[in-house]
Image (cartoon, rainbow, N blue to C red; front, side, top):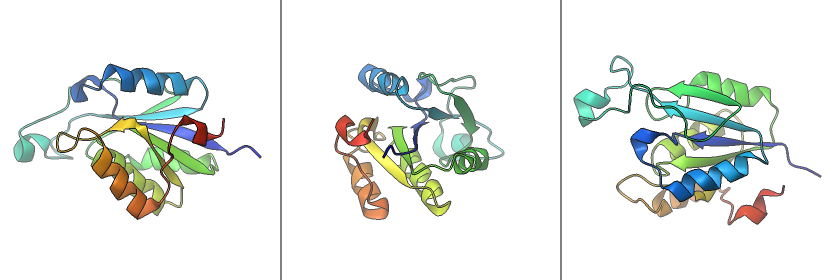
Length: 158
């Protein structure tokens, strides 16, 4: 039986300087799965990145990986529209990868979990924040909170 799943790509955009192998690895997988992406944009009235962190993402960043749908977000979590869209697909699970395993990727996991979706991390296609660029901390937190972390591409079941 085939699992109904979608790839959710978190913030793979120029502002976060993703490693080329991350972009190419995700791009290769997008040829085999439906895909949805988020892109972080700055609006200080929604998320105070500039005033509290002294940093903002690029004003016109786009996803570096092609997706069927791209949702603009402000802050760490995916927008409600992205969660609603995923719910409308009646998925068995949401495969999550991208930038900042210990912040934005983890926030996506919480949002999807709370909505009743089944978030599943692809750690080999995820990097962490500057605190832990390897993504190991994020994968450990993900496993603790959601349980579903795949070991490698063969576990996707395509």
